[in-house]
Every structure is written in C-alpha cells, then in structure tokens.
Amino acid sequence: TQQPMALPDPGESVTQGRLANATVPFSKIVNKNGKHIAGLAMSISKTHVEVGSERTVVPFDTLVVNTGSAYNSCIKVVNPTLDYRFRQMKAEANVIKNSETILVIGGGLVGTEMVSNVATKYPEKKVIICQAGPYILPRVPEAHDKVTAFWESLGNVEVHLNERVIEFDDM
Image (cartoon, rainbow, N blue to C red; front, side):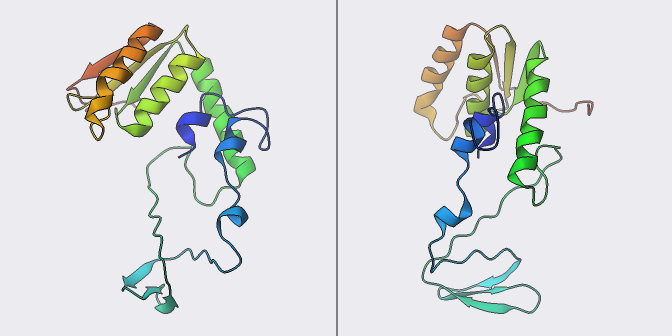
C-alpha cells in the first residue's frame, strides 16, 4: 500500500513526491495482452473464472486476485482518482502535522511502517503504537528487536505490547 509511505508527506503534487513514486499507472503494469476485470468472482477454476451475476467466463493462464480491503475512513474511498487521493492524503498529512501525539493501532507491516515514517518526519511529535500481541511485526519475529531499537534511537516512539484498543470516540 502507498499510505504508510506517502501519508506523512505525500509530496507537492500528484506527479512529484512520495505519492507519485508509490503509484504505478495501470498501463505500465498490464501489457497489451493483459486485461483488468473488476467484478465479483462467482467461481474460480484452474483455467477460468466466472465473473458477475451473468457468470461471464474469463479464461486465463495466470490469475491475480486483488481482494482489497474495506474499513471506515475518509482516506479509503470507492473508485477515487489519483488527484482525489492526493488531496485526501494532503488533508490527512495536515492532521498529523498539527497533532502533538499520533496513535497507531497495530504493529503489523503497515502500522510499523507508519510509525517509522511519522516518527522520522516529525521528531518533535510523540508517536504511540499499540500492538495486541507480544511482538512488533509478528509475521517477521526476527525484526522486532531491530525495529524497536530503531524507534528507541529516535526517542519519540512509545511502544505498548499486549494491549488492545477496545473502544474509541470517532473524531
């Protein structure tokens, strides 16, 4: 995802800065023989997928399924343009810029990257990470000590392990 890298500092425009460097135009990914199909996969076999309520058969040699994610946030919307995403990221970056303390919930790959980027970009701000389990980056256990040592060297990151956020007031 481009958010952890670009959110604290998306850059100056859609074409210049971190967001631009984290975004790949679809035309550069799919060659002339490739095809992007957005729709509900009704069934998948070894040779084809059936898409949509009409169950359109789409044969393939290689299938890539990008399921995406869904959650309540003004940063993640349906079918945004790159310009819209940039404006949203700039607005969210301003929220971070104008905050004294930033709380990141979750010490997985995205949360860890977010903490590192915010804490590095804004050394004067307190960054708190709350992780439900006993380790940061539970999928990469050997990285826990290195990451927490890096955060300790920054001096502005507070780590809470084995803690869950149960409830919060929606801002």
